[in-house]
Amino acid sequence: MKVPAALMSALVGMALLNSPAQADNGNYPPSKAAQPYKPSSAALARKAARQSNRRLERNVRSAIAKPGDVDVSRLTVVARSGTVTLAGSVPEEVQIQTANDRAQAVKGVSAVRNELTIAVSGGH
Image (tube, rainbow, N blue to C red):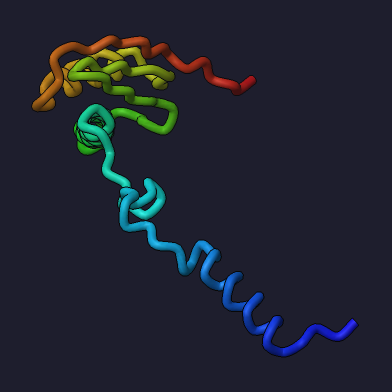
């Protein structure tokens, strides 16, 4: 069945008027998807704390390693709100206290938890 041109034109016009692209949304606020993401103040505080902890970890590790007399290859440093945890192993007992003293001297460190152990050599 052939649809007359005038009827087809009217149907297309009605479809365009009812399409969401042509609808007047002036009474509705913009969708959340259209608004830029703004992190909450709590999220910003957590991010700042993570950055501060990472910076303190780097500073402590650098302070321990810089003079070159402490083997840091198996040493990990974890910082949380000024408390620094030293974990892993070092080859000599004197390096445990040296690492502890250097960590304590870094600005921003309020406490040091020293969980370092002496590495057992694997030689025969």
